[in-house]
Amino acid sequence: MVERPAERQIEGHPHHFHVGEKPPLDVDNMSKPIHDVMNKLVYEDDRQIRQAEITHVRIDAPMVIVGASKMLVDAVRAGRQFVYVRIEDAVEPFPLPK
Image (cartoon, rainbow, N blue to C red):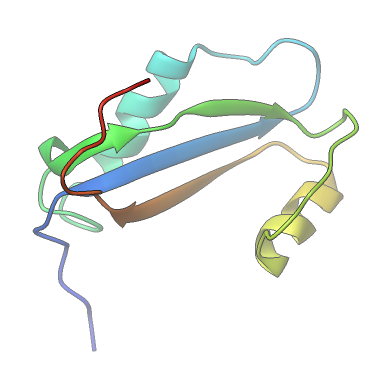
C-alpha cells in the first residue's frame, strides 16, 4: 500500500550532519531544495510547512546523543556527511516565539 502525501499542516526539520568547522552551504540554501523535493511525496505542497528547524551539526565534534533512533545513531557513528529530515504534525495553535 502506498501512502498518500499529507494534506495537513506540518513541521519540517532538516538536520545536516557534516565534517569540519564550516558547513558547505547556508541553512536557507539547504532547506529550500530539501522541502521542494518532498512535494507530492511527503506532503502535497511545501506551503503546508508551518514551522521549520534547520540545523548544521558537526559529526566530527564531541556530542551527547539522547533519545535518537538507532538509524540516526548509526549514521552519526559512520562519520560521513548526511541529511536527516524529520516531519511532524504542526502544533496548533502555533506557539509564538519567546
